[in-house]
Image 1 (cartoon, rainbow, N blue to C red):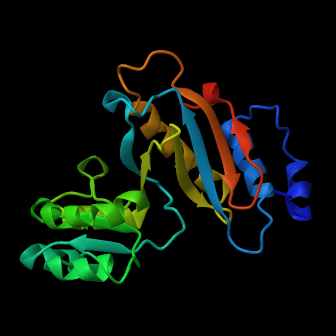
Image 2: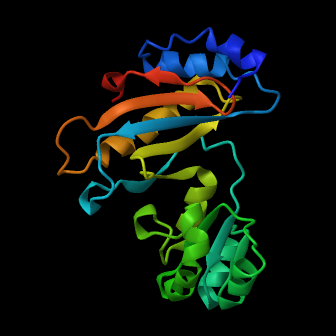
Image 3: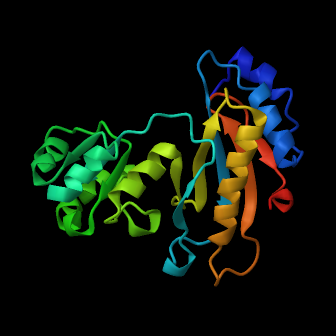
Length: 230
């Protein structure tokens, strides 16, 4: 795919053969984010895990200290007092069985994160074919299946993000916007990498972090030296 002039100019600032310190990489990514909109800054981590083995799966969540810069719409599956609690905590949508046809038949997906109380997982499970492929299925490891809906909603609104291996054993996570300061992006990057390092599977032999690349939505990827990541 042919890249535009702006991309080609931006790419000249990045030496593809260099593994940068995290701070240098973030500065370069900000410098090369030249689109007319506020680009998302993402981190792509290639691991040495084999996600086909259950004991090498990586999945969890971390609250980024400076948030993601994105307004996150939260749907909560809950009933009675828990539904009231979810609304009071700032959930954008709250419901139960009555939401099934809306999501299944009408294709309604105007939300970014789904939280459910444990008693509602039987209902939510029926939406597996719709929510699963989009990474929206609530999961206890990510803190989205919980009785403490208030904390779940507050964490998500504050900048909690999920990380998980994709089919190629890579983790893709947003860590902010191009409008963030270098310090804010570095703090978010450090929080993410701290969580990823803690999530290293005990059974894994060999290299855990094979490569780390930081990039803006439209900009070139900048490689980070995995040995410089705390």
